[in-house]
Image 1 (cartoon, rainbow, N blue to C red):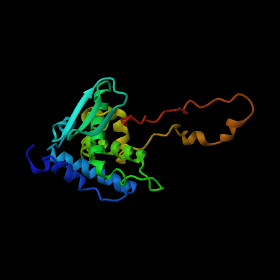
Image 2 (image 1 turned 180 degrees about the vertical axis):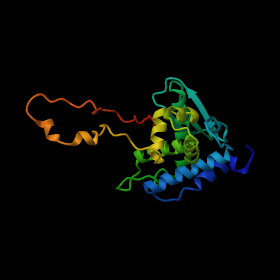
Image 3 (image 1 turned 135 degrees about the vertical axis):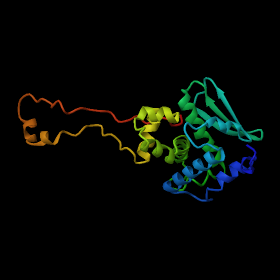
Image 4 (image 1 turned 60 degrees about the vertical axis):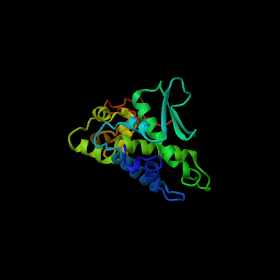
Length: 227
């Protein structure tokens, strides 16, 4: 990594340059996070899954430590002239990858944190900041064009996609919904149209019997977020 963009100020500066010095609407913040993720992949010369997220640890003035028994999944802080990113060793490998990407977005956002993500009263919103870091991590580990290419190429099973991209199945499920490739499964399945006729019989006096076609299913669990 010898390009000017990867100098101590170059890479971070080029990614931060995509951020305007003002409060961002949610759709603006998401768009900027995705552009930053794609630009970072280009600077790291990565063009196919799974992303080598460990390359972040090789960037100038970035130190990554993987420590056991941390009370949280990760943290980032400026210390002694470099950014220190701590990752919980006890987390699953896919979670550690997501956390590293999430914390790197915190590093990028540091100069803007007091004004970029604000609530309705104009006050800094930690919840919005955390959510956009999660979105950045998803964009970095599961880039839109790569996921769509894999899907069109025939890899459409959630588990296979998760393995290909090195993420959890839950994180992949969420990303597929974000990209509009799949839709969120409803908690209750709809009754077959043929069974809808004469619904009054389900409310007659006596013992009610639920049709065997009515099945309760649970939607995908949201995971891969920062603790």
